[in-house]
Length: 170
Image (cartoon, rainbow, N blue to C red; front, side, top):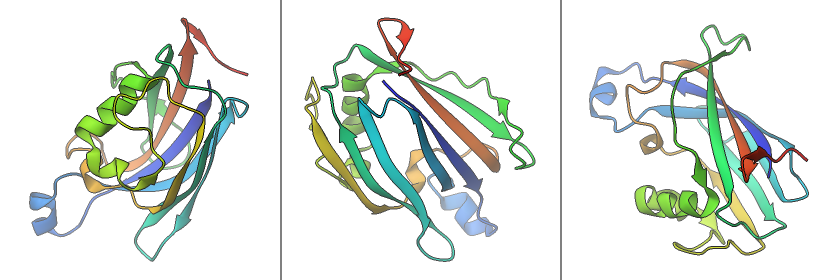
């Protein structure tokens, strides 16, 4: 269906109080880039600086074809220890999921994230209808990634889509 890359900077608070009582880690998204599949799904998203300490995502997700659960998504995670764009593939195993299962999981485990997105598919909606989804200046919530999962530094996520076992790369 598409391939996109997200660069994320993992930050840690220097204050011990916040380190002990925080639910997750602070993520600062650096960039978002979609490289394939604009004819099926176009993620017209940009990352911008909101204030001195936070970044937000703003934009529109255009769905041009109905999303069925046969579209499976895989996430590969890479880490740059020095932050110099020399990434190493991390052996983090995340399950591959169909698009409908992914949306249901978001509603079940991250309901607070779905409320920031306008025209987001409802729980159990499959196939996902053709639509435009809007994200307005949304900061990545700290609860998204638990503490201890990622080290401080520069991370890159590569999302790939497969249809019937073959990567969709057009």
